[in-house]
Length: 242
Image 1 (tube, rainbow, N blue to C red):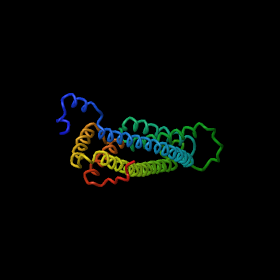
Image 2 (image 1 turned 60 degrees about the vertical axis):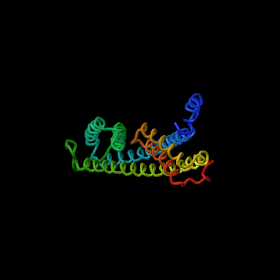
Image 3 (image 1 turned 90 degrees about the horizontal axis):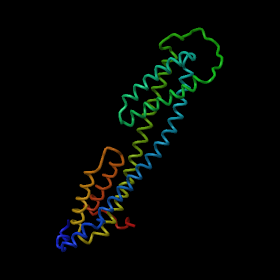
């Protein structure tokens, strides 16, 4: 309760307490906008990455098939990799990168399934056969191709994640600056110290209910803290307010 509210008669204080806090409402609106933006951009990025990895997985599966010396070698390699993927899925945690790697490898296996099920074209027999070998030269080459696929998946995921975080952080700071400017225009008449004190209390309360380390929650904290910092430093530009 603010100092001005303590001077009100008891019924008036009750009414003041029940009325929506415009400062809190601004911060909650900012958090909602930031979260919606983060979730929408993350969804679009995930869809784009899925399409890219599907094409990459198809190319990798075809290259692995060409590397192997015939269907028996490819089928044995497929069974070996299936066991690895199943074990990886059981061990996988909520780490985005680990899950992505295992799922991307599962897509490669699905493509190998399709290759194994397709009619086989007659091939000229070579002078060497590795049908009973555990790991033939071709299957070793295929495994190297799969490792290159994993490296490409990791690299693309990290690149996309870094770019998304940077873009969203910049947009969150921009929205925070607009909110800070609007609050200064609307409530600056009560004094910057009072406004900072009120903002700090609300930000602390919101931080207690935040759930990092998810990207939307982290961006929400960044935005609300930036509003407080902007008001405290007197940096908001009135021209930013609508």
